[in-house]
Length: 211
Image (cartoon, rainbow, N blue to C red; front, side):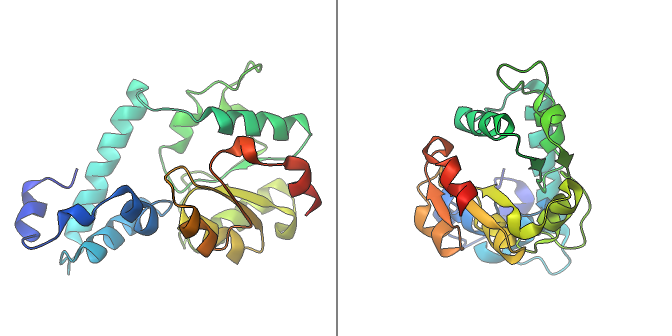
């Protein structure tokens, strides 16, 4: 995605090998699309005084993601489905809270096992893709979700796989489970996650609820 003529011309001397999964997780993941693009360019040392390069990059990213969603070419983490089912089975109120405008499209295409409903239908509240004044790591998205659930923030637990999301959860006064799917346990822990796991199957839900 970075290999476009306008970006190649702007990036002479940029060390492209620095653009790794770890880099993406630390500087881009979890943030609103345009904010992530701006941070990516800044951290890669690519000048963008007018902001047009970030706009172009975010638009290209959206086109790619939308194509993948519409074609169904995206994966689902089975441990996340099992964890959600366990939460629903305990009668817990759950909310979907993603900065991505593509989140609802993906949720609508995924069926929760043993339920005749898509993921889009099983959440008690959904604030995905809204225009918030502040993106993660600001807590606005999670505070809005808690309000929609009618649950006090300090009683909420957020599941996140991005440092910016963990920081947003903690800024909201919530507990946070950090899911280190990319070997980034230290990064999520340093961001403030209360629990760090490689898979949600590792979470002791009873212990989390008692914390």
